[in-house]
Picture 1 (cartoon, helix red, strand yellow):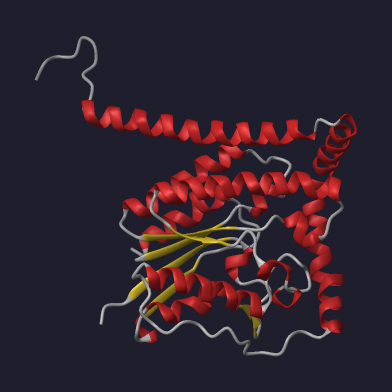
Picture 2 (cartoon, helix red, strand yellow; picture 1 turned 90 degrees about the vertical axis):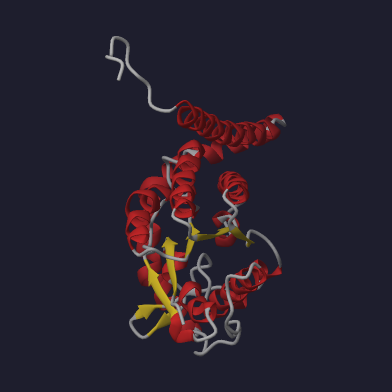
Length: 299
């Protein structure tokens, strides 16, 4: 039986943060892998996801490594870290994702994608801080939706639904799933892949293998690793986020908050239009073939 080669790309969500097994993380992708083939031993899984990765990291570092493995299935779940940076640029995010999706599908692999909930809501931030992050995540999700359709990806709508509000599915940091949440993602991805004919094994179990962390353990994590994570992110994001929040408050006071949404929508449309123009130019260049420079000798 031919092996099914599955490579996972992304950030801490795909790395498995929130689902510890021994000294390592496991996560939804590792839970999904054995279910891709009738014989679990026929699945070959490589996880290239790295905590903190952004879309440009997936494009420049993870994708080349993935293509060397000649995978049958590549998951690309990324974007939240881009929204948590002061350098956020939806046009750059769209270009990065387009490059990744194109490279994966051009090699013949099946592409697996997902849209994600906004981090501001998951962290329970105040409205003025949460709304700018929500607007950014909606922009990323819109791009992911559009490009997933363009490249024929198997796409999971994970940005909303009852599973997001179920605290039993989430870890202590309120940003990553716990074991139950990772299993829920694996189950939902498997259902979509099975429907599309890309998964022939039994679905992953939704039931946890390990007991949930105690409250004391969760508080300890928040006081150590969780605090360190917050400090690292705050150095870059917080000053920018405070400016966004001030702008949010200003517009709400003037009754012009809709302008912010319209601006974000226009930015997404421009980003996707730029990609479409680039595709059209490439197609025209291929149709015309190589150009002969002025003054070049005729062959």
